Image (cartoon, rainbow, N blue to C red; front, side):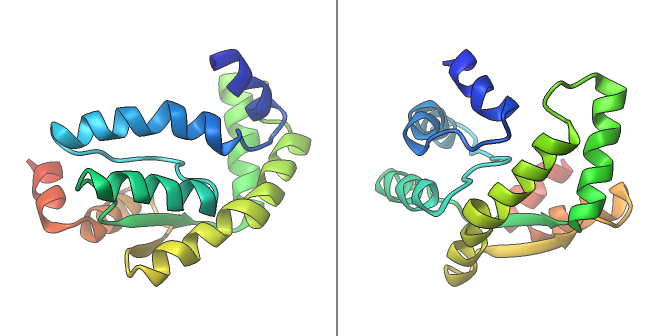
Length: 151
């Protein structure tokens, strides 16, 4: 499964919904029973969001907040190319990053509207300092999660 997913990621493509859901949903449901969960980079398509929400609602563990870290595409390109330089990541080439950004606009950006319509979306300006971004993320979390993150 890891190799299959890596092929998609290294090509800058989205991993198919069925593969992602089969991998993530069982872990999310297990985490929800314990202390809850925070997801980073999921869902990446409206079908993923709809199906994950349907399954999670049936288990009384649906998403309570969605936070989008917003940054201009040029900033993202610069950051990811720098990451490639520092970490030697083979999937962070200008071509692959450009493809990822295009895929985001086509497949993932509509997820923002899905959560906005549910009244769950907060947008955080990711061009601020790391401390400011962290403060805004914590402020956007539901009160119980926020209290736990500060403890």
